[in-house]
Image (cartoon, rainbow, N blue to C red; front, side, top):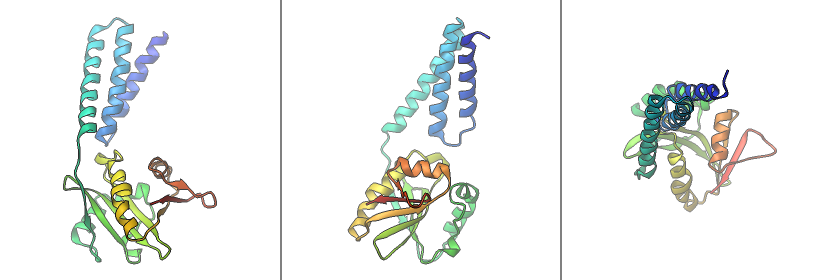
Length: 207
């Protein structure tokens, strides 16, 4: 096998992976990388149709990623009432399987005095943030869920920056949450949570 065939296989693998992505942002990123790799492969084997098609694909993906990155979204919250509403119940049921991937122990009916809100992005409900409060100024996060198409961390920045200021004004000092799920652990570390050395399942972020 010639070495440059490995580049072709790599491009094929990236594009195939992109097609399995639910998140549009990730799909375009991976597809762009795959197309760019395939364009290089086309150049190496002197297949100019392959080069031109994938160079164009790379540019198109780069353009849309740039547009999305520059787009300014309007974030707001819709506070949850004290009782489970019909819409909340439908939301939890619709995304139940996906929620269980990251929060397998989540059960609304077992939470004592749950509080929280829907995260609205351009008035569209894209996330659900559920928590309880402790007397020592700690907000214990029970659920921090975002629907698949909107997992670009903008929602997290809103919750843990803009909304955090409101919590701080109310006298709270930090967020805490627990997880054993690797993908959730990676997410928490990415947005500034720190793992508590004495308890590997506990993560904390100062407000």
